Image (cartoon, rainbow, N blue to C red):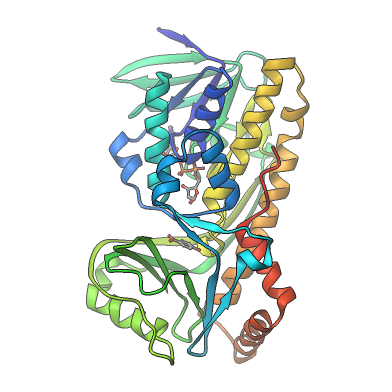
Length: 395
Ligand code: APR
Ligand code: PHB
């Protein structure tokens, strides 16, 4: 059987795996990236699009930020809407100038794939039966099948960057995993439409009919979401029903509402909070969605993945440069601390803005009081702003 040899075998070519491979390449560390989907699928998969300052800084400092600098849309604030009015939260003013940038996750992936190909380092798409093995010892292996041929990679470390449904977390015996999980009784129906964004900043709306979110992808493309049942079928949502519902939930007393246009992409996602502890098992390190999922309300998923791999790349670099395992030993604890802060924030944003099916009159009044406090207290707005823009990546 042909055996490849590398320093770090990376499973998954999402943002986490690709960024890890890129950061290692810049430090002269060799890696092989294995992805079970096709290149087109990975590039075209529509996901979130809010980058924290830390993610933007990481992309820029690592030389993959050119298009992001040109095409990314910097947002200094967001709106929180309820009772027919939008309330502005000036995040930059509240955080000493930090902001978020709207740039689709698939654009991030496209830029990272281009950098990988330019580096000449291996990136294998459409591989099957990926099997991480031997990570409790000193010589891990990753088995896989490519073009019907069984192959193996011998490596020093395995990075499990293969998302929530990946194989790496699954390959750890269940009794070594501590899982913390919460499913929400709703999902998001998301669309992309050819329509000029009617606001320069995002609008998160709490409405009696359910949550809705106004976002964008470019000066010509509006992105919109509405709360729906978790098991909702897209067949039940012809375009006209989507626009009717969005108008009801997003039109404000002052007449503001999203511009409308041709819908060219639709999808439904469930909402879940999930964390696995620890994030390291011997020579296997989990990063990104493989280790944790957040509901999208706080826009943290991609950013947490980037913070993980930034830390993991620094730890591996330190190991290869000096033999020190300090960074590797603290990876799990440090990453989990950031993860739990993001979990708390995402859960809070989600419960404040959505309408659960079993909501009591008390719950609804409490929610409105929370929103009222938020938009009238500088302390409360600062807390939201600080969490939303995110703290600097530590490594
Ligand atoms: N073998 C190889 N690759 C796999 C396997 C497998 N068994 N299982 C999954 N993958 C691939 C997926 O096809 C995907 O391309 O791993 C990749 C994981 O990428 P993501 O799911 O995007 O996860 P991650 O890179 O951690 O990115 C973080 O941020 O906005 C959020 O959830 C969103 O994807 C996002 C995430
Ligand atoms: C998006 O633009 O896709 C988006 C924006 C904000 C979120 C989630 C998704 O909280």
